[in-house]
Each structure stands twice: as structure tokens, then as C-alpha cells.
Length: 385
Image (cartoon, rainbow, N blue to C red; front, side, top):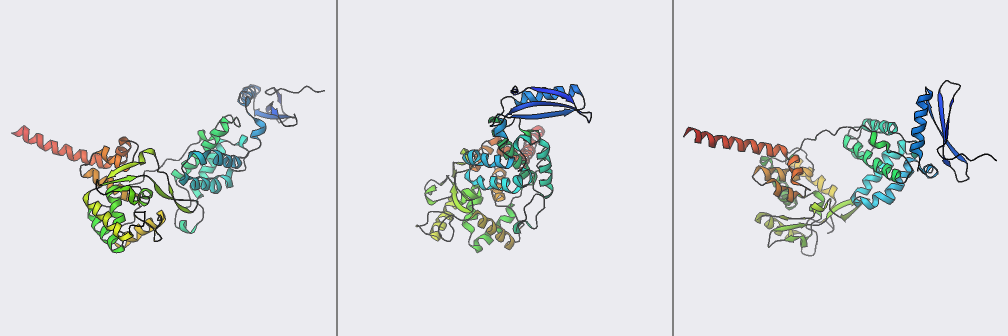
């Protein structure tokens, strides 16, 4: 009876084509039959080193179990058992879209144990050039995905492969070796003070003045604004408690947890904002729980609010901006008018004042220059007195 070769045993031979081959036992299948793998090289010394490294990497791996998965199959396992529990429900649809639209069609059939960083690098290059899915709403957009989206795709692949590594299915994570595209800084857009009059006038005529006034007065995220309920408003003390957001998840408009723990906050509002909210209460009626409801009284779609914004801007003769740029407008105006960075950071729900400082560095730099000029004037007078 032939001796059963132990895991990790290997041998080296020279092939007919002149190259050297190192062959080793990677494991045994369910019937006890040996699973062989090999490495190749130009010299015996090169193969000897490769063989030693391959045998070391193979130690502790569950080769049989690893062979049961392609990358696409493992992404599904990771999503159902890991991502669904760890990430926000509002991100589930995004993750599934990345997996089904971009990962599975191109690299999903590659066995998990044979996936290389080059496979992923080729995927990312292709996605940057022509990765956008053909849809009516994207017909006028570039064919390639953005650098940020490609980096997000790499992030979820890397997370899935880290889980595979923990489960002893692979020795290393090939996603960690990929060169990723740099994200180009997107110029921040805001509504200058001189444009606010036209914007708010058109918003009033369109019947959505209250919503956009409160957004500009608080800087809430879109989902947070739409998630406000009347019991979150303290008219007497002039505060708003931010406790939830409205999001589209699996095609449904639902309430969802906030982005981070810092997003749960209390925001102060002025007397004018309180008066605006009182008018809004009269408009919607006391039986409706949402501050800014849909026509049927439930939560309003975030997409509808964005489309509404674009209509107001167009009618006011103003350039198109994102809803998030109204949040930028609030922060910029607050900083320009002397509100300190820590207060603005707290109102925005940022995790640190440092992040707010980095985001609005252009505003604070301008304020510093103004302060420097002011001090220069004071010192000039003192020096010449």
C-alpha cells in the first residue's frame, strides 16, 4: 500500500521545457486523495525558495473548504453573515449593487484560492473606464465609475477577503496589494448670500419654503431633515432633537438609524425658525407626525426632495447644486459670521471639530486673513501713536 504523503511534503524536478517545478501536498479531499499544487521557476534555487514559501503559506489553511468557493459565492456568504449585521441597513442596497453589478460579472467566477491582486487591479481599471451600468438616469453621465466608487468596491472586497483569511480559506488578502485611484477633490458649492433671496422667494412660491428654510438654519443631513417629527421639536426652548433619518432601503422609504453616534444630537434654532415651524404645523395639521411629510402623511422620498430642489433652483435662475450643498451653505455662513468651529461641528453632527476644520478650511483661512488684517490695523495705529 502506497504511503500517504503528509501535508506540506514537496519535491523538485526539472521539466522537459527547461523550467524547474516544485510540487507539494496541499491537503486531502473527502476521500483521502491528496491535493497537489505546484510552483515554477527558471532555476532550482528559485523554485526551492518558492516551494518553501508556498508550503509555509499552506499551513493551517482549509484547502478543501476553500475550494468550495468562487469569489462571487464568498461575497454572498460575507454579505449575508457579516455585512448585513455590521453595516447600516441603508447601505445594504449599495453593497448588493456593487456585488451583483460590478464584482460577480467580472471576477465572480474566479476560485477564491486563486484570486490575485492582478485580477482585482484589472477589474478596477475596467470599472474606471467603462463600469457604469446602463440606465436611463445615467445616459448623460461618463461611462466609467468614479474613483470613490472603485475605492468603495475595493473596500468591501477587502473586508470579505479578510473574513476568508480569518476562516483559514486564504493565506493573504490580495486586495491589500492593489493600487487604488486617487479621489479628486470635489469643489464645494454653496448658495452665496446674494442668491439666498432669489432661492427662498422661489421656494415660497413653490410651497416648500419651510423645508428649505429649516435646512439652511440647521444644516441637517437630508435624511435627518425628512426624519423629523413634531415630538422632536421643543418650541419653548428652541431646540430640535435629531434622532432618526429617512432613507430608501430595498426600494422602500423607511426610517433608519443615524449615520454615527455623533449624529444623535440636539440643535438650537432661533426665533425666526420657530415661527417658520409654527407655520408648517398649521399647513400639515396636528394629526400628522412628520414635520415635512409626503402627500399621504408618511415619510417623504429623499429623491423627491432633491428633484424639488432642482426645480426651485431652475425657476430662480440659479445653478444646480446638491441637497448636501445646502448643508455646506449653512456651515459656511455660520463660520463667516463668527460662529466658532466647535459649535458648528456639534450642530453638523461631525465626529470631531478637526474634521469640520479640514472640511471648511477655505472658510477658516479666509477668516484668519481677515483677523490678521484687523490686527495689523490695530497695531499700525498703536505703533504710530
